[in-house]
Image: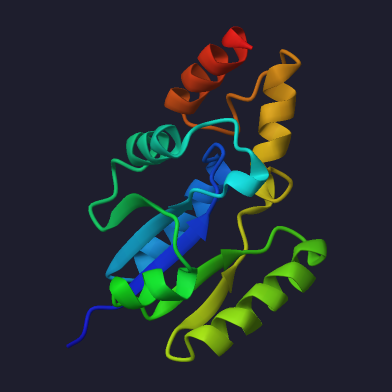
Length: 162
């Protein structure tokens, strides 16, 4: 029987409990989940790609079927190279849908053999985004409910340097 491999792509700057919630759901559905962390220099991330991969790996260590890796190629090409059949995308609110629908349609055009599956986070994480976590942390707010302790430490160090 073929193993079902899913890719959950994103910038993960940083990985949040909302992301982890979706990863937990995907890990129960698929044989392998690849958390694909986009280099994405256009967004000028707070954390380097290596830092984001490291934080994701540490946050997700409890999952035997989840791995985190960086990428800087077309997502359709990454999916093919990993033999993935599924792309996971998160929808927090209706406002996410239009953009996510565009991405899913483009990915279907580029890799028709790969399906996009939309997952929603638990209600307590539906309003969390990496950018909101960074903003609250930068202003001295407590983000411990929204990120893994290793991310809290990394945010504190990163923001202390700036």
